[in-house]
Length: 282
Image (tube, rainbow, N blue to C red):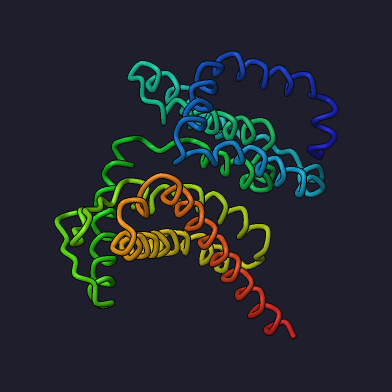
């Protein structure tokens, strides 16, 4: 039996599954969407389900032709996801509760449809994990080292350019102004969105496994490098134009431009990988 035939036979059960999941996880989903709305670090969450849906649509022929061979191991994954949901609810640990929705769905696919079907749909399913905000303790532990690194490299660049500057931790001291490398300038904020976009871009444009991972892993150095550039340029402008160059509209615009530049770099890297692929084929 193929997935197409199985869906025709069990479409009402599939609909019931999503209705039940929606009712059980209603509060979890609403709270997660609220985080996307109020926290710029996770605003990309709105795009993740859409990209996942695109992958399902793009792979629809392969998915519908896949053979259904139910695997009992999937039930263990479902039970693990349910335990994750219950324990997360008891401990009010949002990451566990939110990610459990994906875990339970993965287990249900394996249990009802089998490993072949899961292998075919694993990208759109696992991609949904990128919509889940990471635990605050992990975010905070990553932010400070990145802020210190960005501040250190930016100051070295300013010194090399002839500007009198000192640094104390993530504080940059210029003769006429003191700048703080805040969380938004650490690179972690743009990294969250850049990883989500780079995964989608990699699977849309690259056919080889290693090239996809080159593109995905490059998101980290690209995010950090562009934020170093942001702090470096802000330091130069603040030296000449004062606090107006480091606050308000310019600061927000600089954040937008940093992400735009990062996307251009990722696009150029993806194009370079494709060029090499074409040359090898020719």
